Amino acid sequence: MSAKNGSTQGSLAGLRVLDLTRVWAGPLATRIYGDYGADVIKISDPRVPLISPNGLNSKLNRNKKNIGLRLDKSDGREIFLELTAISDVIIENFRPRVMRNLNITYETLTKINPHIIMCSMPGFGLEGPYSEYPAFGTTAEALAGIPGLIGYDSSLPISTGIAYGDPVSGLNAVGILLTALRHRNITGTGQFIDIALAASPACNLGEFFAANSSNGYTPTINGNKSEHYSPHGAYPTRGEDQWIALSITNEKTWKTLAEIINNPILSSEDYHIFENRKKDEILIDAHISDWFASKEAEEVMFRLQTRGIAAGVVSSNRQLLSDPHLNQREFFADMDEPLFGVKRYDGQSIRGNFINKSGWKTTEEVGGSSKEILMKLLGYTNDDCETLGKQGTILFQ
Image (cartoon, rainbow, N blue to C red; front, side):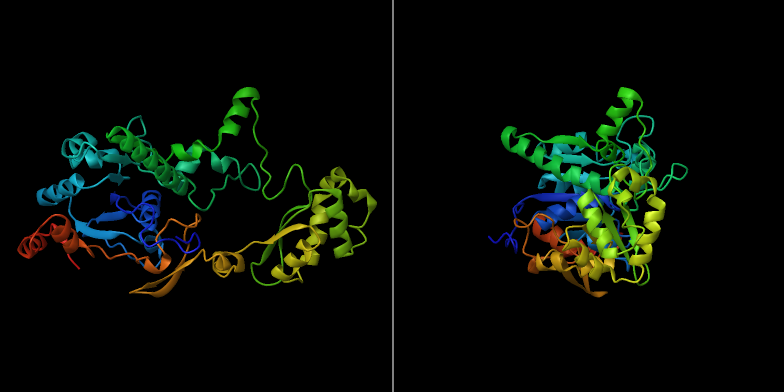
């Protein structure tokens, strides 16, 4: 197997996952499993479209089969239970009451498959005063206090912009499910996992909790600035919304920057001392900004880097898609989507063990594999499928 190009089947081939998740955290976890070869069956409500022009669902639901199934109908629930009997993992991120109302709890499912591993990812967990509240990644990061750690001043907390709670929870789910599968391989028993979306980002802030509980420490809101380095920030360059990030970490790199800019004010020996630069940071930033304003971001980045200065273009998402380093490493995946043509998506950060990208499948429409799943996996006939379709229990494409 080539670590560069992936394998034919992937390291998780033979594993079957029933995916009841929506939005980001859960679909990210199951997409990773699909990329690595697991047989992921996404169970979608036939009344809710999955594919949209914004590409979010397409990004998160590749390499999955799709069955359009009404779980609120008795026949639909029975089909889900039949799939449970032949599956390894079930993952969902509804509010707790949803699975209870459908009578699809872990207690019910283990009677059908005692080896099943079930993972629930509600916003605030299955128990506690917030348990029935809905939540998104932005809610989770706010509860954890992340917006209070970032921003440009203490009067206006700012969210991360990436709904931090979602990807962190999704990656946590990947890891804990692999652990549960290993445990099952050793003991033969399944288990239930409760991942609260809001808990995942909080678990990444341990040093702040420890510092505050120790001595009441509250972090300073620095924006793009640093307590230890100066100048340190992002500066506009030529063109619309083009920026470069710069960090001067010692006296040597400061002297080099001052030499390159060739500004008499910045060349003052007073600024060889960090404390003096920090004191006059606003003035220094103004002169640096004036110099950068006429320069192309990428050109000046390479110029500074070759002189040992930490500098980098602040890429937009569109610029990132054409990044030469990521493209040389074949990080991205170009997917030819039936409705939208070829679109480029992020691939896998861990090379090797996933399915070769040439074998990746675009996101299926709701019900795209309904007939295949019913007939090949569960032994239903064409007549059975026709009846279920007429009843509205299942959507077939």
